[in-house]
Length: 232
Image 1 (cartoon, rainbow, N blue to C red):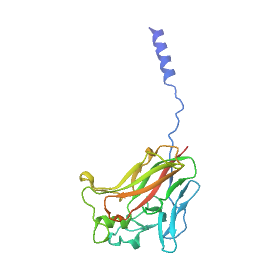
Image 2: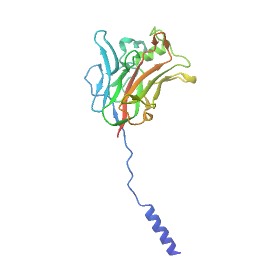
Image 3: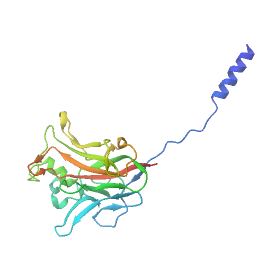
């Protein structure tokens, strides 16, 4: 009996010995703090990313990504002249963030990955201009106030070379479907993990249910911060 108990104790000691556990990886996050000190600036680039944009000097017309530090939570200021403002009193991290303007009439602007990484998640927030346009039809005469069934979604599509992947991620930043009243006004977190791996750029498009004869009536802007990723 003593011999049996000794054997059991020995087995337990062997089974319970500590072993090395691989630490869980923590993603790195880009918070867009490294741009020149002014209210807004077109494009953004560092060693990891290039956020594309275009600018027409003749017509002072732009599209794609721009950095901003303008915050405004007054819907009365939700005018085109205030298009660079986030509908929040702060950035998600630090003081700055990105604004993306999607122009469906021009070539889309992409997030170019300059290193071998996979995106994990991102925080999104409406601009003051977009928020006011879908909340008060008197602010923007071209757009209508959102009602039951309406939505505004940001679509991320991974691209490898010239081939788009089927692993699209749709982020509903405004969702009035099925009785919901969800709006991204608090730097809402959206997962991008389903984009998968093996892509070198991500195309960003925005879709709305308020569409007229000439295309979208809703201002197709979104603010972005804390874009997190894993290095491969």
